[in-house]
Image (cartoon, rainbow, N blue to C red; front, side):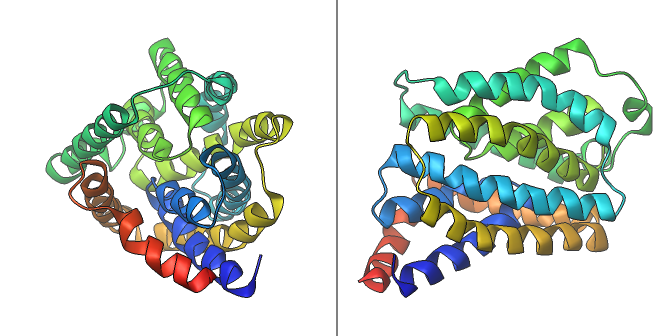
Length: 265
């Protein structure tokens, strides 16, 4: 690994950590970068989990210091997600990637509708829902979200945010705090499975993690300082850019691949 590759990994990790902490979908960037630097897709998927795990250590710590993290609800929702992630990380069945991308894009756009057109209902929180015990149906939802997160990290943040906003009644800032706690909870389990299957490159993963951790720290501080509206517009921008990629309006990989390859050589 040369100096240019280190710079590319850290700088892209900074953006990924920021996006993942405030919204989700940042792994589409980190996975693309790792693959462009020569890692097979399966190895890139495992390697990315190192950066994701360390990124969420920083994010959880920061949200905790700022007193916006609900440990009880977060850990309750993490249990089914962990169980699901163990299954997802071991799934080897083939899927139609194109159809899957379209499904993710549709879900992200639906979330955009909730955020933009009924914000008072979905993103500012409901105290009466927060105080209720979690419904068993919500546990089932988070189990399946865990399966997806264990299988491929990319985009899981949107599923988690939707589940927390609709099922637990937290506002967008507190929902992000719970989201990173859940991802942190299941990542060590999935990381072990990828490690056991020799699908981790530690040098690339730890280098990427430097950027991810810095991005997560910046994002968690800005989320609390600037509030729900700031997080809302970050999500709007990220969703629009990501769904454009998923629906084939443009190809981010094709745009950044020549830059990365030229820099690496």
